[in-house]
Length: 171
Ligand SMILES: CC(C)(COP(=O)(O)OP(=O)(O)OC[C@H]1O[C@@H](n2cnc3c(N)ncnc32)[C@H](O)[C@@H]1OP(=O)(O)O)[C@@H](O)C(=O)NCCC(=O)NCCS
Image (cartoon, helix red, strand yellow):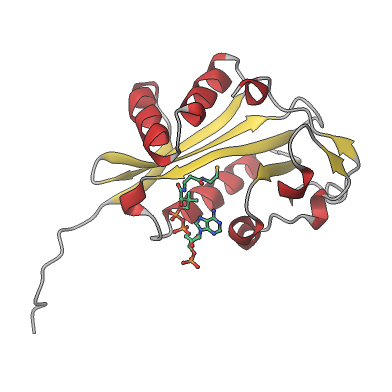
C-alpha cells in the first residue's frame, strides 16, 4: 500500500567548509546562539590561523549545522571543539552527533593528541568526552565544564594548563 503522506526527499551530507560558506555559517551561528559571539569567535579563529577544521551539515542545499576545531597553544597537538551548532528546526535528528563523530575521526587521523570541549557532559559523554580524563587540567575557563576526549596514549589524566587560541579570551 502506498504511504498516506509522501515526505519530500531530504538530502543531508557533511563536508568541509568552503570560503563561500562564510556568510551562511555566520548566520547559522548567530541564530543558534543567543548572541553573535560564536559567529565572531569563528571569524577570529580563522583570521588568526588557529582553526584546524570546520565541517558543515548541508540539508537540501542549505547549511544547517556547523562544527569547529581549533588548536590549543598548549599542550602541543591538543585541539578544542567549539562551537557546535545545528539550526533550531533541525535539532534532535542526530546532526550534531554526526558532526562531532566525523570531526573527531578527522582530527584523530590528523594525529591530534586529545580534544577538549567546554560543555554539558550529558551531551558530550556519548562521544567519549569525560571529566575524569580532564581532572588534572587547569584552564582559564571553568574546569568543572571542561571535558577531554583522549586520543594519544597517556593523554587522559594529563596534568597541564590549557592555553586556548587568543580568540577565546576575546569573545
Ligand atoms: C547542542 C546541539 C548542537 C545538538 O544538536 P542536535 O543535532 O540536536 O544533536 P543530536 O540530535 O545529535 O542529539 C540530540 C540530543 O542531545 C541532547 N542535547 C542537546 N543539547 C544538549 C545540552 N546542552 N545538554 C544536554 N543534552 C543536550 C538532546 O536532548 C538530545 O537528546 P536525546 O538524543 O536523548 O533525545 C544543538 O542543540 C544546538 O545547536 N544548540 C545550541 C548551540 C549549543 O548549545 N551548542 C553546544 C555548545 S557549543
